[in-house]
Length: 380
Image (tube, rainbow, N blue to C red; front, top):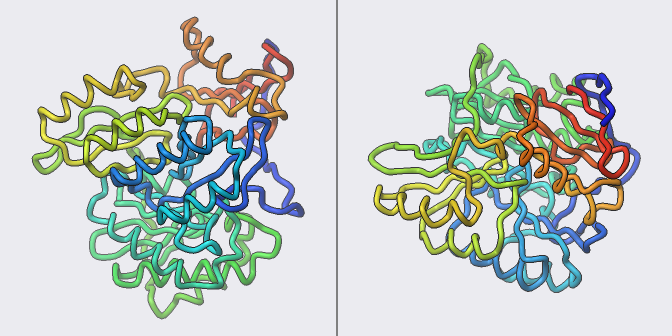
């Protein structure tokens, strides 16, 4: 392995090319077939949706379901792309083809008081024709007040401050807030203004000079407010969590993947589930005896309920054989690294190319493949 000092971060991405973010209709073509991505706003999945995802993975894909960093679901290895897209529509997971790729909404998984805002925001987005031109990388977020979603630098979002909701614009607190009744209206109007003015930019943080103009468009619904500060926002919820007399189980996923078999087992639990932007999920509202059974049965099948598991700190892009841009089998190499007990402190990510797909937010140890079994290692 070769070690190199890497800059903390750098901009990557040609904004002159079309946005390649996949959807259920416009898919990405990889070495292992098409990649179809399904937007489930807020990551809020019912047992029926889990069954549907399992059927889609088995019928059209490679049998696995992949969780993305925007809390969406994708299936790889698709060869019948038209049939897949039609099946997604038939199952009600594509309410508007025109809005396919931009309905990226993440929410605090344990912020039950704000979960209903997801449906309100999604409905408002679906009513807007202006937002259909947004990049598939556009991200909306609803933070319950602890800073977990704020840390994801969403393009448009709000933070629950009790009687008011502080607006997030371009990943930063905007210095204004609105009432709960105006949250969806404010976020959609901001998104519409951005769609009109963004030019070739994909993310709002790329055009800070437009932020004041955008906020002026929602001035009638907002008021100046002090920006919240978060010194120690919560991490991903993993393990046994008790709220209001019920158990909620937070479970991590190795490389953000679960099999169709595991998806069907989750459906059998017959409980609501939130898929998180941390490659994990939270199973809600269980009685203690049911929760104990879930852990006992599903842990051996791949759900990680141990918050100290090394698997929660190590991520990897698809790598070979699924991605031709990679010279290495990144996930095999990452798993081998874990097996050897050589994992560095903190987060670690294995990348097959400089795009570093799926890399974590914040600082991490970066393994960049330069050849098979050879990586440049640094901090980002």
